[in-house]
Length: 165
Image (cartoon, rainbow, N blue to C red; front, side):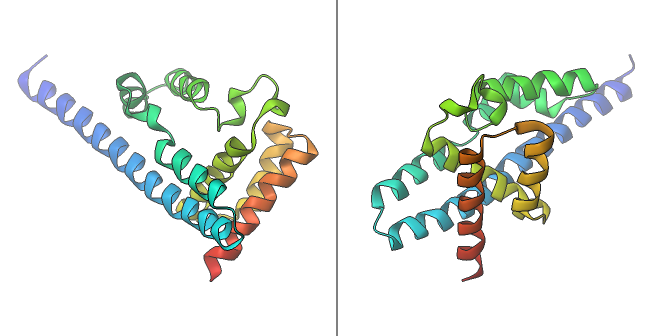
């Protein structure tokens, strides 16, 4: 390999890693903004404990993306197989993803909240309607029991309402 090709390859890797870093930081900002909306709601409704728990999970949200294997995996996905492997790894490490669960019925309330925040944050980031998204994806991928779907939609609607204030 000649020096120009090596330099081009190194620059491509750096560009990909900087793009991944930017995606993580951007998503984290949307996560914190979305979590703030729910925390405000909880505090206004005299539920400081839930507000603080929500804040804690939001600070830790997607922390696995700072693991070198995940960071580089997301940075250098080339094939569909690469993409599937790193996404599967991410799901296995993060219980706020429905794919983490063998039986979603065992999910706890704070994880439902974190999952809802993640859905809402992505909807803000990509300018989509979070409730329409979750209803569509639930039919296609998630198959949440009615009680869990209802809670997710409720949290999404709370964030939508708080975001309009």
